[in-house]
Length: 398
Image (cartoon, rainbow, N blue to C red; front, side, top):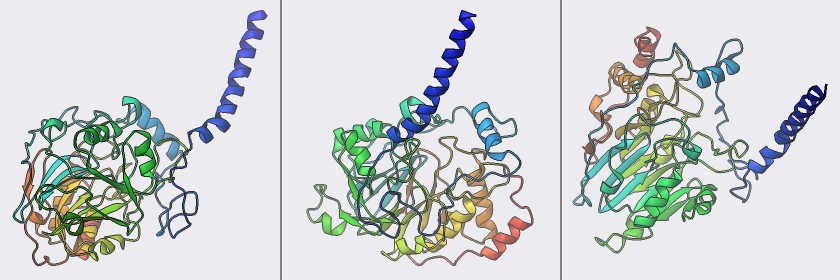
């Protein structure tokens, strides 16, 4: 009887502890990253998408959310199999690029090295093995396309938002210690960086900053090279209850030889934000996500991620520049097969009568020479693309 009473007491106190945790821990984990005036995308406490917040995960069917979480934890036998490891031939980029040339090297996921006009730019740098806290989270299947020690001196780092697959504090600490680059992010994310001993410049949408510290090649670069935060459609969180305490953004880097646009991580939303970026000047290179768009069989887009179909629309809205597809093939974040995003993009470009060379068929570790600015190609035939989709042309791509 004594053991029964002891067991009942332990059970009771466990329930009490769990109830207290449910009320105390979320407030403890919440963070106030930013305080400022109310705006069209900030309500005084949280940021939001002005074109509507459809960024919550949507799955269908009876018991869909519970079923989805169960499959994420215990596996899904119907989900396409990913390789455990992908072979990568690593690049060894030059120290700097001048004379109007532009090089881009895909390091993996949303990490790119862009070199032009004597400036080296790194986007959402992640060299860690896992995309998550404390060494947990999705494990990379492909090593970074550039060894960290082979990176040239970095002048500008762009951080689109604070999700672990885009803001990797371990990598950012190494970069800051080594190069002291200008680290540009959006409102609130600088508080997270400061907590890790990393200085950062935080911008609101449409805010701009100069390069800060010039390469030796020229002394007037603050006037020649600027970074502007531009709108995207996403959300933020690093814990459980700090959702949308910081802002997400895309970026336009204004360079003498042509602008670079980095979409970061985004859904399609109202589809007007690409034109807002293009209004800052002709875009020579655009980094556009194409992966993690499918969270159950048949999905073509999610609220906070675009797939190949919407990537083509974003490319069109940007003025149809040379583009590099990103955000696929490095960390398994969703349901689709590893090669589905690029294969689907290639098929969709064909249906839309788009020159496939406008999207680089880049592999991790590959360096691509970006063409000079020129006349934009014809717009995509979106009606033909819809007809291909209706006819089931992409149904076999899982």
